[in-house]
Image (cartoon, rainbow, N blue to C red; front, side):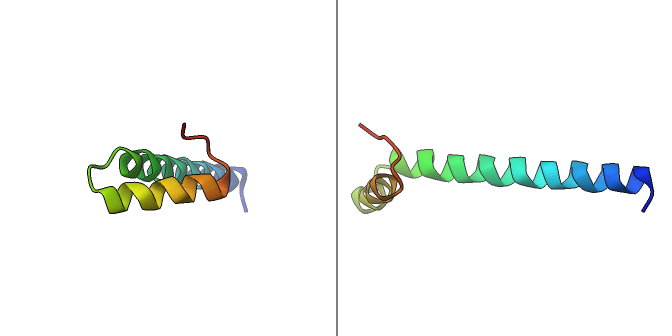
Length: 55
């Protein structure tokens, strides 16, 4: 592989990781502020099980 190909592969991987993290955080915070009590409770329980502080 050429240096250009390696650089492009790293750039693509970085963009994918950033997109995945952004989507994950958006889902956690959006469901945490959701009006649906069931959705909020599910997110709340998941945050507690992963050690994420929520209150």
